Length: 307
Image (tube, rainbow, N blue to C red; front, top):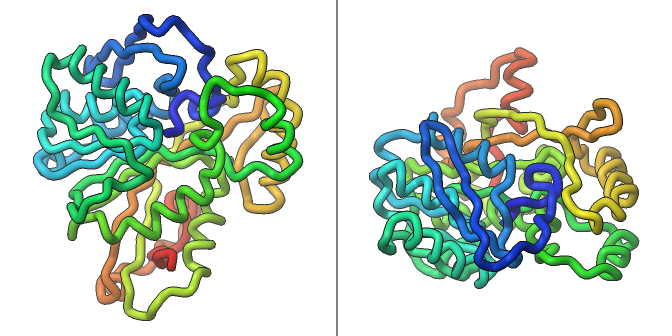
């Protein structure tokens, strides 16, 4: 999910010969050769950035715990986690074709199968809880009716659901997270500023939930600027409509981007999400009254859980 859409999580990869391969390298020399399949998303700039962050900042005890990657796509992040020493890894993707490719990529790179790749929407259908969850969700919102009609007129080589509908996917993720995150665990998610990050967390707060239930707390760990890129002719044809969609998003749900010359630049926010029991929420320290604190948090304090 959300690998290789236009602009780092933002560009659809053109179909390539089914037997082709390409190399992906993360920090500290963690390199993998992946099958290049038209039905599986290419590893994006954002995916590389997320992997590099994991190489630099994962805690040793997390590698020894139970790990879940959601939206695995080619399986590159899961392969990286295995290469870093993790032994209990599950990975899901909504695309059965992507799951098949990810399994083949593990065999090709390691010679055996250790990762539990599953075809599933978000979390696996099991009561198991995970110490670390990694997720790179779709970066764009549900398209407007006018833009959706334009998209439907053109055939795409990749599933649009993996590029758009990031708002609904993230809300479902936040709602379900407490059922799947182990006590003391955390989720690391990569968020595209074009999706309207603060608005989504705000919507999760506004939905009624029973008193005394868990909340989710979010904090930005790293913020990276990427240009919006168009890798194929079909996306170039939609450029004007797509930019209009983002401009509308700036007004309606605080989509964040800047323009440098003729290129739109968006921000990739690698974010830590933890689940807090009600008494833990009350014990959170007050946010620091500084501009830096405002940049590094989607809002002050904990984010109440959806539902």
